[in-house]
Image 1 (tube, rainbow, N blue to C red):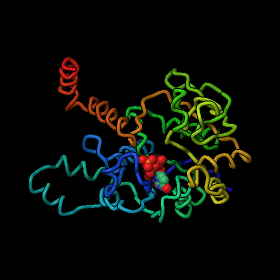
Image 2: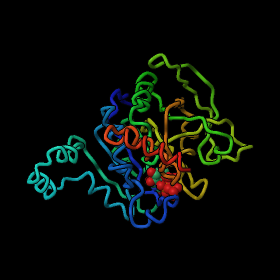
Image 3: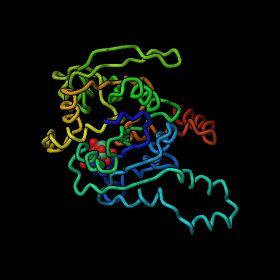
Length: 300
Ligand code: UTP
């Protein structure tokens, strides 16, 4: 089997129902909800592009057409912006012209595992990244790049982990693992785990650790065989967690502990926090927003 060094492809599953975000997700894709002026999925695309990934396979479903339109050309808009001399906006809407986008429709939302399996024919035998767009990683962070470096070093799948409080383990896939090394970047020691097993959304008392799987993965093509072998698991969905457990019988899977900022923008409160914090990072709003927050806090 060929061993790939380059990582050029990313799968962005976007076919979920987004029930936590109803009513807006009844007719609009969750992935198109904007933080300031960019939809959630664009943050993921840009995170990949910063790492040299330029091939995107977006898994879509019912009511998700807006995602395709967002990354497509729109010549009438170009013309209007040109007439108005808004060249900076033309540049902005052509930011992703160098990347390639393919769309695969998941006929029913049968789970994250099933969504990833839908991309099998496009990925072939290359390694690939999976990003869940409702998990927003601080754009100043280099998590994905570091995960790619770990993949290149060990040629094994890498899953991003974050420590979560006891009362939140039931919202995540939780790993059972052992530290294999401290992997320093910019003199910050970061931990790499060898994963021994994963449990999907365990009860607090059954959780093997507080290390939760977050929405960034580097996977290898053998995950597809595992995804084809699994049966519907928790919630009647095909769970990626179950396929990863199968994969563990044949190869090492690493977990990489992320200590930076992540926002669960698929949850309404997490989305509010992401909006405020990412807006504070925007130079055009930062000062005014800080002043506004201070004046608001004084009134509360
Ligand atoms: P979530 O667990 O957040 O599910 O999926 P969801 O449907 O989007 O949202 P809630 O929980 O009902 O509010 C994680 C990611 O996997 C995708 C989603 O689009 C999201 O990016 N997904 C999930 C699929 O593509 N297909 C599925 O069948 C399920």
